[in-house]
Image (cartoon, rainbow over all chains, first blue to last red; front, side, top):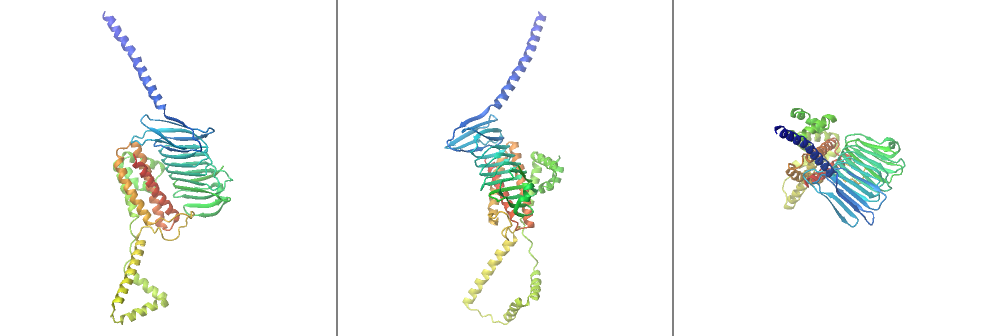
Length: 249
Length: 224
């Protein structure tokens, strides 16, 4: 009788450990799955080239062009981060609500190439590819990568972070990149004409092989200005604590 | 890193003279250490305000010396006032009312010009003096009024942000303080360049941009 009771207790104990582990495992899987679930997913169908504003606080923003006429936006992030949108005609605004908890929200967005973009962020990297519309990026703590961009106007201002630009400049366009703590790395086709105004407060400006072809050059201790080929577009590069690097594609 | 080490290196840190590794160590320490952050803020304030101290005025004996040297160098120019001074001593001082009014008006004009000139000279940086050799021709020179307005705006925003900062997520606070420091370092460097060359258009433009960037940062974080 005593033996039987003892056997039952041991069996119950042995049974409860795997159950606890299973429950724990299920909770962990559920938590991971919940975290990776999109917090926000929308598709917009603008009638004309749209103006899309993304306003984020903490997280990466990745925007690429595709060959469809719709805009597809997807955000993943912490459960307490609220993402909301507002559509006024062809003006679309997607924003995360400000919260004293720095919850993360990562955006993945696909747009028609001619979409104009305004991106505002506090912390998190920004990656934009294949855009031909106007582009404005203002962030505090972000590395910004602009690849295959062929916009009539680009304006990037970050307080800290590197800015990488690999694209084309349009005749008469305006292109301004500024970082207070980070490098500016710009790659342009060798046949692109532009008027350059580069200023680096504390580090070097390296114009690579563009330097020898720059005419009307004025050089100061902190800046270089000049015209490449016949000029046309305005390229303004400003780095406070960082280098300016210009490469030919 | 302990507080003593951190505080010994803070001055070089503010000047941007540290290696990247040391800089990162200090930033990490500052994130967690309120007393060291206070020392850093004090140092930044000292740097900031020392740049705004007025220029030292020359001694009273200097002008007579220069005047006599000039009189020797350009006798033609100075001979007339000297003759006038000699004849002045022999004059009878019987003024009519219109003469007195005219003299008072002339004195007021002279004093006004003197005050304007002395105010322009007493600033830390002569931001409007001389042409700015900036490559960008459409850049407006930075006036003292612009600066004062920006500094006033920054002070108001800073007060608002300081009140909210304690309730922030530590990561958010770190991001704010790190970026504010970068901007302050840039401003200190701009002031340094402008003190060396007050008419440098590039430095003026960079300083104005840095101020605007500080406003943008504070406005952004004020919303939290």
